[in-house]
Image: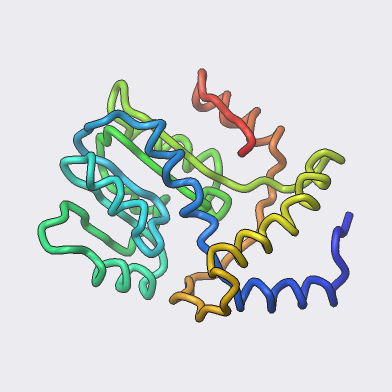
Length: 206
């Protein structure tokens, strides 16, 4: 089911390029509300420009931030204020998962790039007892409700871009250079696999 024609998609792409905003950062405050006030070691998987890792450092003793994109990781490294306990590295989150245990693991808009079950198993293995895992991910639209939510999101996204840029076209920030891919799992498939690997996990639409 296609919501927009190719011509409309191109027009929307031009609008979003002129009025960009960081969708991932929209969830950062929500993520922080899921975490303890203070914790020891944190891991941010798919750290991108490092915004979330820097926020985590305000509560953590130390933060390890990993991403597969060397360009965006180098940019994030340059933005670290002196003395901030954050380390950025270019890492394959499956083949070279940084050894824990971690009191907090976060993963935003990244898990659909990884083998889902393998990623969850590694998160579980490296999460400290009593630790907190927060994942913000994408799913493939399947149901009528999925497609309706997608349709509602299109004008909402455009409006947010306009408001965030105060109606003025803005240059886009440095973007990811690593290959991207669309989500291939539906929400129901994610629920089934996640509950098998992480019994008691809470899953919700945002």
